[in-house]
Image 1 (tube, helix red, strand yellow):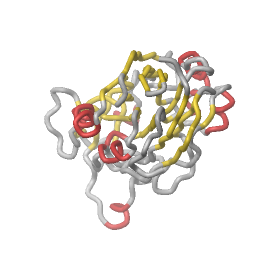
Image 2 (cartoon, one colour):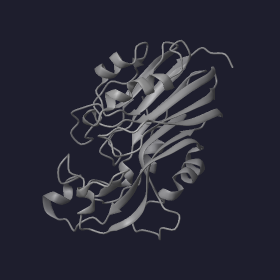
Image 3 (tube, one colour):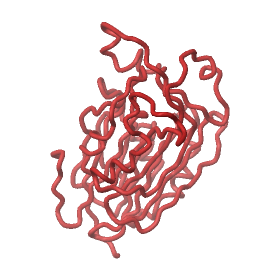
Amino acid sequence: MDRAVKRAPGEVLVASFNVHAGIDGWGRPYDPLPGCLATDADVLLLVEAFLPDADEPGAPGVHEAASIAERLAREGGYELAAEASLARAALRHPPVLSGHAARRWAPTAMHDPGLALYGRKVPRAVRRRGRPPRARGTWNVLLFSRLPVRSSKVIPLRPLKREPLDRAILTAEVEAPAGVLTVVGTHFPHLSAGSPFRFDELRDALPPRDRPGVLMGDMNCFGPPLSLALPGWRRAVRGRTWPSWRRVAQPDHIFISRAVTARAGEVMPHAGSDHRPVRALLSFDGER
């Protein structure tokens, strides 16, 4: 698909983008807005969005993160349909880098000193980090829509012993040209934290499989296990999304119900984060 997508009558373009708090793994900022706008989506899910505290002084390099909804409204015509804060967060000052290290997105793919998350229990590794934060705020999942939003809600998920962060599922009913589409968005924990124990909560949050529905987000899980856990739902995008510079896995997904057809689906180019955005062009027949 081209970046600017022409929709046939009744078609809807949806996208999911893990923006990694608007920083790279060292803590160096980038602006996630161009990547968001490049999706050209009618419905857009942002995962790992950083929102600074209201009383936080202006931090150099925080690209107007507090007004991401305002910026998307102004430049993309979006409204914020639903949001959930999953953790307290702090952005760290990036170190002074040169040479090969400066060209790397992070020290290693699994080491991320630029972002500190504070959940229900602050891990010792977080408390011991020496660099002071340059900005404090929250780590969020945000659902935006260009289509009229009929209703929305946030479903908190039950705490897990191995998961120190809060988790939630966002749902919204949007009025598409062909009828009402139920959109479900979330950010699941890693398998090691017990995400399979949340599959029953996810299934309960989904609309009936014979109704127009779409599920998207960073699931931290491969496609085949998710397909087994979600009978009646199909993958609309297949392609590796992480890490964005040398992709080895697809944790970012768009699933559709039986009532929806995927006209096209793709993994988009690198847009600053360690995840690449995914988007899909959908069609369905529905009643208003």
